[in-house]
Length: 174
Image (tube, rainbow, N blue to C red; front, top):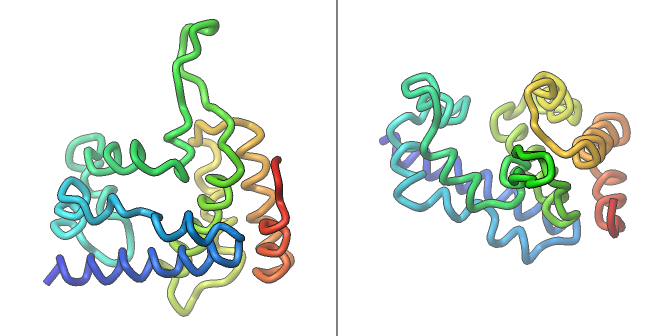
């Protein structure tokens, strides 16, 4: 039963991301969004820990202190800022790398779609920004990527989807 509910949730989310990616001018990229969620490494965890109102990866983190499914996911999906961390030999440490624009656009679409799925009928255009701001102190993201994502989420909150997606569609680089 949980496997079916999980499948429906991730598929509904993926389809919503595809629709948003179309609005953002990256339709083909959206078609490949989150395909790794259907792999055994990710799907089995999602089915086992499905709750419907939060990520099953959070339960794995509570159990083990980390989530193997999340590590699998973020390592294969470039729309997650966590993917864009690499070792800098000059600084001798791992640092965040600026995300390419096309993945920043997909990250925005993903966050908006996730808010819509988890908030349901209670969703408002301010929810993605509120969620982002609650976690901002814990994000290890390149400063330019962080600022642009914040700008887009603020624009969504203040000016709505139509204007924000028009802006994103016309973005070349940030």
